[in-house]
View 1 (cartoon, helix red, strand yellow):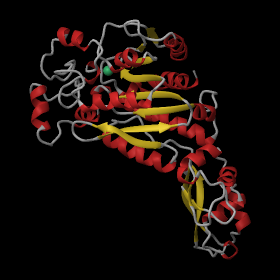
View 2 (cartoon, helix red, strand yellow):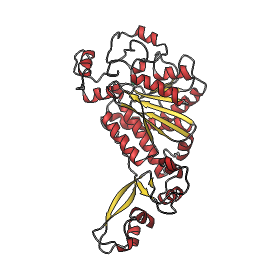
View 3 (cartoon, protein in one colour):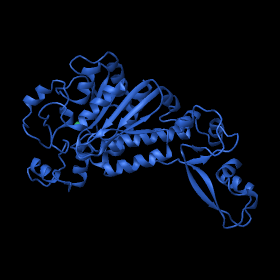
Length: 398
Ligand SMILES: [Zn+2]
């Protein structure tokens, strides 16, 4: 929500008035943060609020409205500066701030790229301290949305939907983000854990949908755009069902596409041409989605990464003995908070977390949510979410 500052207003005053932590207000107004005193007429973003309206009724007074709505007087004065509040007439409409207490993201739906895009725009509007950029583009030109939240020195990265038919992971990650935001602006703990210290101590980076073209193919069917329409039909050998599709739109499995013993996967996989799943590519990192993730990891210097997949109710945290000792400490806590099985080594190479561990010698995790056959049905959502929330919080507080 935007407000217009008056003479003498400060960000600190707004933080007190709206009961929003000062750091969230400062981070929502980055271009102003070097000044302590605001200028009259400055537009200020107040996170965690939206504007609502109220129609004056006969008998209403300023006092009766603030008692009825349980709001401070200055909510009305600040939001209606062009009006004389002592002379409000019935039928007149005034603006009131309304705290956002409900989630924007509805994760229990087919979570395609359009849904992600829509939710991100809404979240940005209500929580302007989110930093939203793009980590790159998919083959079909969709931006790979990258969200940053928090100002700490510890850098934690989460990503989802490397695999197309594991799109439920994007819904889970957006749900986690929204719950974190609600906890921050409403001052309520998550699982008993106050979130502001997490915000102050951690910079969380999220790429909720690494493979948007693939997700849309699984959820919405064959794209109309040339040459992709013919290409995916051919790769899928003219089968009408795309439910088993894991790859990007060109039939490369993005999580078998990183330079970490890539040749081993290349030689042992049956898929020798672009396929709905398991084809590691002609060489590593030919695909823009994987290139973007490599560049992001190289640029951002993450302390730990969590790549979210389905299924198995377990997570993998080692790679060829290259993982640091800290990985085990984190894995023990992840297992404890989620009851998911901790697995150090799995016979697989060329994945994002394999490459991350090999390249940076920092903790990397592949998290396999839920159990069953991909794509997991939304009926599993309520079982999956609480376990993932435990891991999410642990990834920030550890
Ligand atoms: Zn996967």
